[in-house]
Image (cartoon, rainbow, N blue to C red; front, side, top):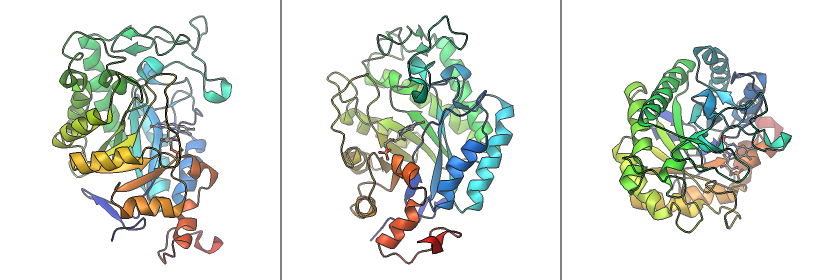
Length: 354
Ligand SMILES: Cc1cc2nc3c(=O)[nH]c(=O)nc-3n(C[C@H](O)[C@H](O)[C@H](O)COP(=O)(O)O)c2cc1C
């Protein structure tokens, strides 16, 4: 029977266990450049035995940043500092993955620790946000500019160019961020996409941009490396994106060559009735995996070793991603192995600490 410490092989890449670090924005960078903070933030969890280390949302365009201090991959100068982080992660026996992102209409805000509010247009830090339709995310957010067909070509090319840079930096796993109300999710959901061209209206039209982004990435991303997508499995709002939609999307993404769906949820509207609780999104991963017959990752309030192990044993997901629990305890995998009675060596250096 599969368990949390069973390796996971996708294409030519083997992750040593089923534990991944979920992407978590740090808002710690100037001009999108990776730095020591990123190396320590990700590196500590690699030392702690996490099999797959995912970067936070990494902007493919400067206007696609959530805040002015986001990590970025829109310029060649951003490759070298990222490579140094990737090399360190690899030296710990972990696989390094990158989350490529565009914030869309949720761009141009201050980091949470500076209040998290949208930046006003009289501030020199301000820039114009873009979206499928000119509907702001909230009353506080700026009105985004509606993207033209020409703009969409530019965005697809930005994802493609970012994938080339990611490859040059040494990443072996690529995740496209199509969740949490950011640009690609905002095309998927009927709540934010009111277009009347071929990118809006029907389900087929709303998923078109994501599919074209995947297609353009696939031109440059090697066939032997995993390509994955994070989705919001549901908007948790009447009239929004549903788990049923997610299954249909996952079937299409599988046909398009996507290897795994990372199943998160929410983020489309400022206030939604979300039943937040232990493992509250696991049912999405379970359903997408069973019905679309594609590999999945489960995420969201997975904190206990037995809980994570059970998700894998029951086949509800192929891997689990941990966010805040890894912030609290970077060496969680070592502790988990001990608790689960596994004799596996999780981390080369810190085994004796437990
Ligand atoms: C500080 C912080 C930053 C986050 N940044 C991102 C991000 O960049 N991309 C993303 O897809 N999710 C992001 N998330 C969501 C996490 O990846 C994860 O899905 C969520 O925290 C639920 O998992 P957890 O309960 O294990 O923390 C962030 C969460 C936190 C707490």
